[in-house]
Length: 317
Image (cartoon, rainbow, N blue to C red; front, top):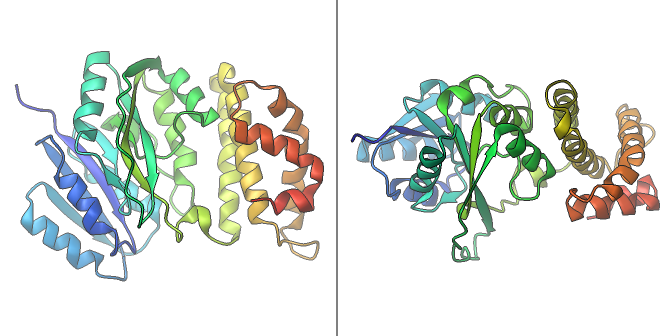
């Protein structure tokens, strides 16, 4: 029987040093029917010409060149151009194991699922990835998968490390012009899946990039994380009340991260009122976090640390 076509969407920006390893891992997939859509988001380095060379060498690879518009726009452009029945994302500074596509598709097919997720492991430039471990497959409803994701105990809201029926992704485009685009959209994709297969195997390799969004200095755009978390809570309240504790845990996590980014925002700054508002919300939720046995240990530790006060708490690492 013919293999279903799988689209891999790869947004690319300033990844010249990492792109070869990423593309090598994609081309090494033990699955033939691939549609690799690389979106050059106006990258100012050698990535555009590198991508064009990969496309000349491998007919499965297509390249979209566009002016820089941000990662959300790059993801959306790749999704719009995708030809596959199923779709997965790979960030251009990361890598994937040779069996990622096979394992996720097999799990979805056997479970009759609309989406699949896998474990990930981190690596640095000078530290090789640890050996993969096999761990079986768990099948959940979309609501259960979303709830587990919001608790951040097994997998998080990143679009990568997951495979979806393409129509699920197209139904929930990433909000362009905002960062943390995954936090706005991925939970909706999983919620709309009738079934989700969880592959307990670290098939996605996430690079700890010192220049990544999570490690940048404060800029007002990071408040998008708090806005996205607010939307998640509103969604749970109206669409999935059983997931509300998980949504509140995810909001607590996002608020704590944003507050730490804002550690140097003082009383004279126009954003200071927002900082105080976040702190009040964190304090209001801290006992809930401490009492929630499902909340991840990091959240519960942060809740305890709020007793130090806003200034000390915001400077914790």
